[in-house]
Image (tube, rainbow, N blue to C red; front, side):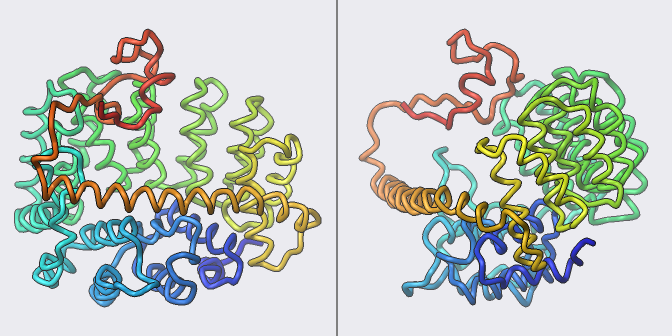
Length: 442
């Protein structure tokens, strides 16, 4: 038997941190971010406090505010007492506000834009847009018709056809245009054929079409166009991290049994990275046949990491039918650190549903020590973030302190296939070199 959504959401108020962590993860991964869930997340924050509510409290910022909830987020930003959110959390709360529905922003824009935090440039890029700029841009674009936004999106894609960075492509602006198009149901329905055509125009997008194809992937997911699943899936072949991420996200947004069936039917013949991304459709949304598919894929899969992912998927939906599947995968290699996510999900389910699994006490001891280490790491990370934010404020207020020239390797925003040679000149493949490094300033 599977717990109901209401029973799962009750876990946000559970006394055990592991239950709260797994429940907030469940709603975040399954894109259940609506205000009714946000209310329960807020209740948990108010009960346990920012330091103890979740292992990673920034996740609160992923949920959606409505007009009644927005004052709470503003109040948290303004707090200065001992229980106030730290600088990093304040940033995530501000981002949460800036991503609120346009009607909420429009009604509260004066109050929001009066907060200094929204006007701070927290980017390393000079003159980068602030959250206030993004809010004003969203409000401006949503004043336009969906048809105007569609035309602007296509024109913008023509303009950026030859650029090779996300910064130059201005993807955030494109996503705002997509928001407006999706908002107008009648108009967006009239463009379904155009979206399909652009997704199918090339088996491998070229430099002139790769940005627009990626954006049509996003749009197909937002509109839940079930008949585009084969077209979306085909573009995994490009093996570009951005494509892999937006394709996976769109398949999850469509979220039907047909999506899971399509992935499962092709699974055995796919390269490792496509199997890796494809497994997200079994973890990130629930269907009645999903566990059957997971069991079938375990019969085919020999790779230890991907078997672990299948075990995690089986344990991710608070369904008793998945317990034995996940448990058997974990017991194949109980010392594998990558398998810890399996027992974290099983323990949370056991505590929430009062199941009392045989290994429950042993597993709890097994995860407690790493979690204590993570807690120390989190506190150190919070300290470093606060120091970095203060340093950035100092440099913005005293530009004369900046001397010399900064040389930037923009590893996170340049389009490089993961299997190509790294642009840094090391001779290694990109995925083995700078793709895994943070942006560097030398």
